[in-house]
Length: 91
Image 1 (tube, one colour):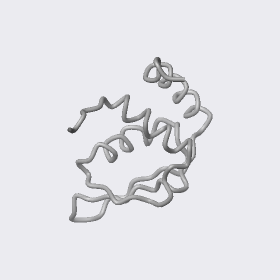
Image 2: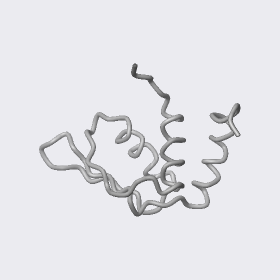
Image 3: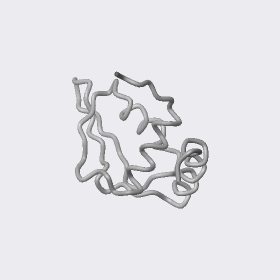
């Protein structure tokens, strides 16, 4: 069953995935997808280095540069803040 997540939860997951080098390649995304919307939301926040979105002309698609993406110092700090919020019961 699908589970709706908030933008903050999606940002937290993206920060975690980039931090642990989860992405082994770039991704082609539908521009309506949650991952696309999340990357679009965080792109100018200064939390990531080498994270880019390139739209594909005339199609609702984009390429997300995720393989080379890393967290900045601000990204590591934001990840720690969100971890306290979303991983309260986990250790």
